[in-house]
Every structure is written in C-alpha cells, then in structure tokens.
Image (cartoon, rainbow, N blue to C red; front, side):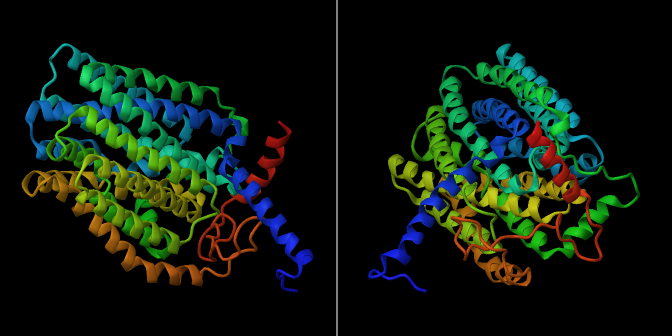
Length: 471
C-alpha cells in the first residue's frame, strides 16, 4: 500500500523509519570504536600523526630555507617514498607472513628515532640538504614495512561487519591530525623548526603505548601466509584477475601521482601566490584538514561504498582542486580548500575500503602494499613533476596538474566500475535507515570464487565475536 498525504496511518511508519535511520547512521559512524583494541589504535595514531604533520611542515620549510627551490622540495619529498616504489610489494608480503602488531612496534620505534635525529641535527645547525635526503630515504625504508602492516592490521582489530567503518574512521583520525598538526606545525615552524621534529619524536610514544596495551586475545588475526616461491607475483596476478581491485588501483595511482602532492603544491601557493610563509601554509593545510574531517564523518556513517561512488568522489575532488588553483584571494582559497579536503578523505577512504573489503585476507597485505605503491610510492614520480611545474609555470599550475587528471580518471572509470557493480550482483537488503538504492561490495572473505581458496576468517570471526562480547 502506498502512503499518501490523506493516509496518515500508512505515512507514520515512514517517519519512524527516518528517525530510526538517523539513529542508525549515528551508530554506524562510531561502530568500530566499540572495540577496545581499535580505540587504543585510533587515539594513539591520532597523537602520533599530529607529530608527523608537524614534521612535514618543518621539513618543507627547512628545504625551502636551504635551497629556495620548488624542484628540490619535490625531490626531497620524493626521496621519502622512493623505497615504497621499489620495495613496497616485499613489505606487503612480509606483513602477510608476520605478526602485524610486532612489525608496527619495530617500525614506529624506528620512525621516532629518525625524527629524533632530525631534531638534534637541526637544533645544532648541522643539517645539510644531503642529510635531509638520507633521513628521508631511511624513513621511506621504514614505511615499506610500516604502511602495509598498519593498513592490514585494521582488519584484525574489528569484526568484518565493522571493517568499513574502521577504515574510514582511521582516515578521519589522519585528517583530524592534519588539522591540529599542520596548525601547530605552522606556528612552531615560524618560531623554530627544531621543536617540530622533537615533538614528533616524542609523539610516537602514544602509538607504541597503544600497541603495548592491546589485548591479543581480542584480535582477529588473518592466517599467516606460509613462505613459498613466487608469492609477490601471485599477489600481482590476483589483483590483475580482479577488476574490482585493478580499476580502483589504477585510479589511485593516477590521483596519488599528481593530485596528492599537497606537501609540495600548498607551500608553493602559500609562498609565491599569497605571499605568506609557514604560518600561511599551516592555515591552508588546517582548513583542508577541517574539510577532510567533515568528509570523513559523513563517510563513516555510510554503508560500504560502490565503484560508482568512488568515481563520483574522484570527479568532485578534481573539480574542487581546479577551483582552488584559480582562487583569486586567500579567503576564497581557504573556502575552496574545505572542499578539497572533503574530497580527499572521501576518495581516499572509499578507495581503501573498497580494496580492504574486496581483497581476500591472505592477500590483504600485498593488496594494501599496492595501495601504498599507488598512493604513496608514486610520489617519487609526481613530487618532482609537481614541484617543477610549480616552479616553471607558476604555483597555481601545481594544483591544476593534479586536479584535471583526477577529474578525467573519474569520468573514464565510471562506466567500467558501474558495470562491475552490476556484475557483482544485487546488494543484500538494506538495514534500517540505509537507502535501498545504495549498492555495496560483497566481501571475498565470505564468498570466494571457486578458483580461489576460501579463507578461514568467517569462522574465526564468528567465534571471536562471541568471545569478544563476553569479555
């Protein structure tokens, strides 16, 4: 029976459903925080990444102070991600074979020690450009193992039904950290760069403490992959055979190479277009982070994303970056950066969620290593390109060179991913408050093709869910 204005009785349930839907969306927004291990990880990461953004601001202006060159800024940024480009898949395989929590205890300690070296050398005025390159490359080698382990570890702290929310909230934490870290870093960099590096070194204590306090009994560990020859190639073949993984990874590679170079483009915009310095950059990065936090909270309340939604996020984000490139004044630039931040978290969280939910658990480390390669490892290519374009053609073009490809790749991938969505079948019935038209990805951990091994994760999840709730 169809409800009408004249039929208040039949219309009433719809109002109740809308109210229930709002409450359900609120619960979904924080669903993964119900789990103690994830709460510890969330807040530890939040503190640590605030310090990382303070160091990012300080390093950018340290290089500009030493060289006054946009190209050098791009190259030093690229040096940090070069090891990921070369060895990222090996790091992903290592994460699939080992205890991810133990990997993170080692890598986070090493990152803190490198930040301490930065602080000492900057404070004693012994820092040189070649030392910046060496330390950046060293941090890159740490990230070869840290990035895939950290991304894959998210799936081991929450049950499968909360994984999408956990991935998105992790992205929210990263962007909340950007808001505070960039703002504090901009202020402290104007006073002195050493303090930024020192505080970052100390901030790693928060994530180390969170890892130490976790209950290993409440984790959902994936079955470790036994050592066999050709496993890196097997991971590449697996992704190549799964269009639902391959197409998003191609999108991420294009966007990560040219658009996600804000640590290069925004300092150039702040310095050469708006006549500011570290403080202006800090404000710009913080405003962008505010938009990202809002976008992340909205994304966290959504159900699992579809390929179509990922393409629309790419298109919208590309438009926002292009608008930021042509903004005539700093206030209008800040307004545009709100939408740039919103688009960045929406695209990034959707892309990571699609990969995490589509990948089989025994392949997740290698798949997320490919994400790291596409999103972060592409910086050695994109960073110098964006820096060179900004120096030779003008700082505004350093944004255009990222915004246009982001827009175009979204348009090109849209018909392909819509077709993949349809081929993956009809979505399961929507829970209360979720629009029925919203598509979702089905998990390989629950339904696997006949030519792929079925993971034991569903059985482990069912048993672990029961014991965790009892705890």
